[in-house]
Length: 133
Image (tube, rainbow, N blue to C red; front, side, top):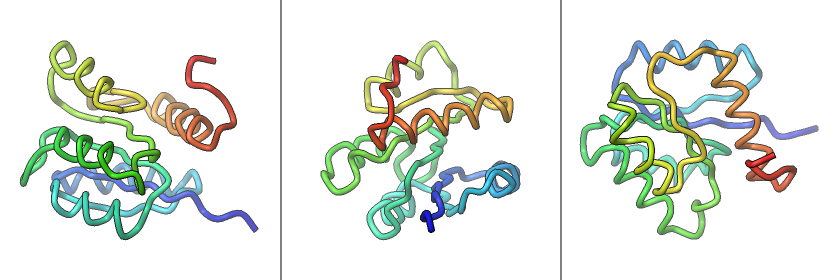
């Protein structure tokens, strides 16, 4: 039997976490949560999720700190990250993608768009296709 795909949702807003949880679980994903940069880093190292949905506006360091820590640790550097934030697109999109994010979306995001990005990022991380296909 295939292992259930686990997604770590990192967001300090409980309403956002709940909404993403409902949508992701309805599509067969196991969901874990972190609400700040410290707990996100700990969860990455202990739980080793298959994918991370990351907000940039986090207490205790922010989303860019989480991205940097992820990229610097060989044990977790291959975990794809989708940034989902309310922060300004023009300033943050390029920085997030350069820091290693697989995709960048502003809140709110359409369910279909997010689920497609999740499937594609997972396929890329598993070596099943390149992201530019």
